[in-house]
Length: 85
Image (cartoon, rainbow, N blue to C red):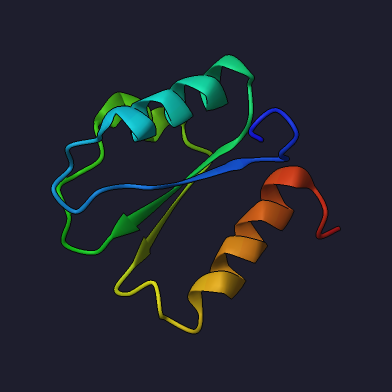
């Protein structure tokens, strides 16, 4: 699915400890040269500096139920892929 996607959106864990699924997802994203958007919960452990430097966007959020989150993700996707021009 990553190969057919315009970008990859990864939910960063609250405790900052990625599991094997996240690690594989990030690895494939980077291997395929796909843009990376990280969704990071406010107050979570910081994203490692090197990973943050590879992300095209980092979006912080208070809750996945935040009604503005979808719009913020869509705006970043449009910016990254050029679909908003």
